[in-house]
Structure formats: structure tokens, C-alpha cells
Length: 201
View 1 (cartoon, one colour):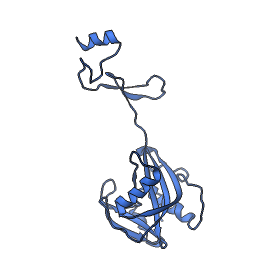
View 2 (tube, one colour):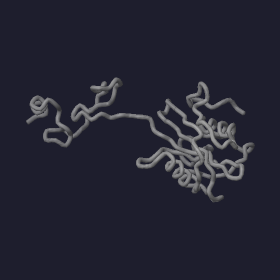
View 3 (cartoon, helix red, strand yellow):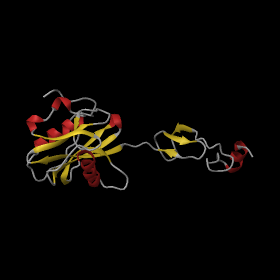
View 4 (tube, helix red, strand yellow):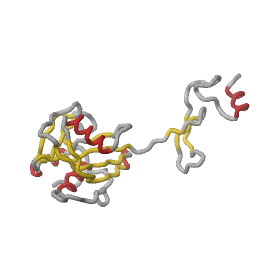
């Protein structure tokens, strides 16, 4: 029985695991029933491939008035300085993810204080959650994704070597509320979408 015959009898193309299927997905981009945006849909089984923004979690970590930063060992922006942050994993909360990223990038155990900011970076389809945090112990070192890890005073921060615009946002917004017990989370600075760095300091 050919695929065309089977489709005419059942009203659909056989799924890859069904008899008569070619096992190769054949996606076309169209608007699914009940949706209003075009998606990639498999013509054989009807599977809809949704592409949604990724969630990044991280923190501005302090110890005795200094800020923990990591120099990236991987692309993008290898060799530039960032805050401990990365993509959430399945099965974890945002807070768990932020603590895990600090362990992975800086071998650091941290205590989260509160949510500092929520950033939207549409160019790369990311939502970033940044927390305020402190080191639970003065112990840290470079993890697999870091060339080096260091504590910086505000004046020592390598502003010209920051990896991403959102690192600059988080640092400056953190500074503006430093010492405050309770804060309302920040968002992107006015007009900023992460496409360019702020002007030099």
C-alpha cells in the first residue's frame, strides 16, 4: 500500500513510525489550526515544532563589597567578563538554576537575596532573570566555562571588557539599589533591547 493510498483512506499522511511511512520528516511553515502565527509543521504526522524564547538565570554576587565576575572560556564572547549566568535546565526552578550556574562557572555557593531584574533580548530570543546574591563562603575558582574568576570593587570592574550589554545593565542597576533591603525588579533600560553596549563610561 503506498503512502498516497494510505493517506486517502485515513485522511492523513502516515506518521514516521507507522507502516508505509518514509521515516523522513517533511516540515512546511504554516499557521496551525487554533493558532495565529506560522509554525514548522510535519506534513507526515502533524507534529508542530514550537520555537520559544530561552530563559537565562544568573546573579550579581557580592562578598565584602566586591562583585564576583567570570572571564568566559567559551564562545560567544570568549575572554570577556560576565556575571555567573546561563540557561535554565528542565526540572529546576529559576532560583535553583541561578545557584547551579554559580557552582558551574565559579565553583561558588551563593545565597540569593531577591530578584534584581527581568530582561528581554528579542534578537536572540532570551528572557534573562538576574538575582542579587552573596557568597555563602569566601571560596570560588574557575569552572569549566571560565578562564578565571575574580572579585572586583566597583572601580575595578573591567567595563570595556564586558561580554554582553545585559551584564552592564545588571551591574549599574545593582549599584543604584545597593544596600536597599527590598526592591522592585528592574527591566531593560529605556529603549535598550540588547543590540548594543551603552556608551563608554
